[in-house]
Amino acid sequence: MTESATLAIDAKAKALKAAGEPVIGFGAGEPDFATPDHIVEAAVVACRDPKNHKYTPAAGLPELRAAVAAKTTRDSGWDGIKANQVLITNGGKHALETAFAVLLDPGDEALLPAPYWTTYPESIALAGGVPVVLPTTAATGYKVSVDQLEAARTARTKLLVFVSPSNPTGAVYTEAEVTAIGQWALEHGVWVVTDEIYEHLVYGSATFTSMPVAVPELANQTLVVNGVAKTYAMTGWRVGWLLGPADVMAAAINLQSHTTSNVCNVAQRAALAAVGGDLTAVEAMRRVYDRRRLLILSMLRDLPGVVCPEPEGAFYAFPSFEGVLGCSIRGRTPATTLDLAALLLDEAKVAVVPGEAFGAPGYVRFSYALSDDDLVEGVSRIGKLLAEAS
Image (cartoon, rainbow, N blue to C red; front, top):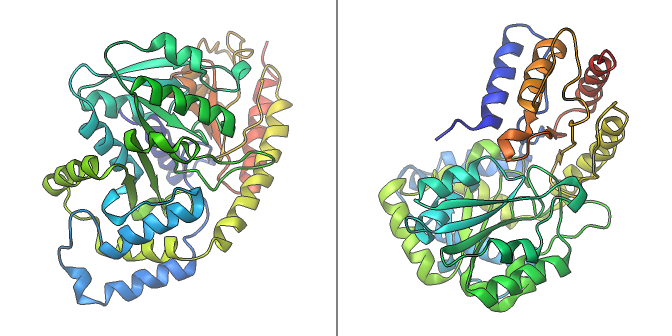
């Protein structure tokens, strides 16, 4: 396995900043907001309750599992979800790994549209599966087509990884596109693992569509990954969940009972306050992200040699820097975006994640979950550096 590129970049940037370097980081996909007060207070109260000092069911607190089922119906429109179809996990990453572990046998193929989040291929391989990467580009809106999926399907195809809104691109599939892909999966008996962690972060005319809602018949071959990290600014609390058919979830619960047991009870109590509350704080954060989205889009499009499609969801921009590669910048000639990311960190003290980490060489991911001042300063530094290119 390889190290998580996003965490590696973030760690290097933080180390340089701790050493006194004026580093601005666009690397980590982490909200820059504090967790809302009412959620923190729920954790404080939970700390003082001795029942939270003990083991609880491996699948999660019964009341949290029920609340997640209710929240799923409220937010995505998926009716009929029951608590026994919910597994509370140690973050969304753990939910993904569990999903692949219970579905994939050695040699099974998992269709993986690229650009993809760095963890997907590693978790698939860890489960014995084979990632089958399907490239997309800015020209296709970073979206995979049914024709691409069908061309890649073989007798070993077990599942499709589907993500909308997307990390790293910010792409959001339309309801019609989600429906078409879901119907293709249903027709061919392909499982879908759909990551809905950014469901509330959509902008402009884009809307979130949950695949098992768009194609209800697909619910029996779909696993949904979600969590509190992005929506409620709770990345460090490590609470996610996995939803799916009861028999598959029983297997997932058995697995978790032998790996991690229950998620931290205090964090679960905080998550209960989050999913059981209203979305006022979530909407306030979404509006800020929307403003930053438009700001970074405008600034990136002004950079020489850079092409940036408009992101419609999550909090990432994913521009192409192919027009910059091969240029001479301060005596260095970056041939790849890996080289370019190193140059930007060394010369401009700006940390970004190169597209190679996401299966998309030539592109760069920028998280705009950082302050407006840092956003403007960071992109301005890149602009000054690129102005020297020849």
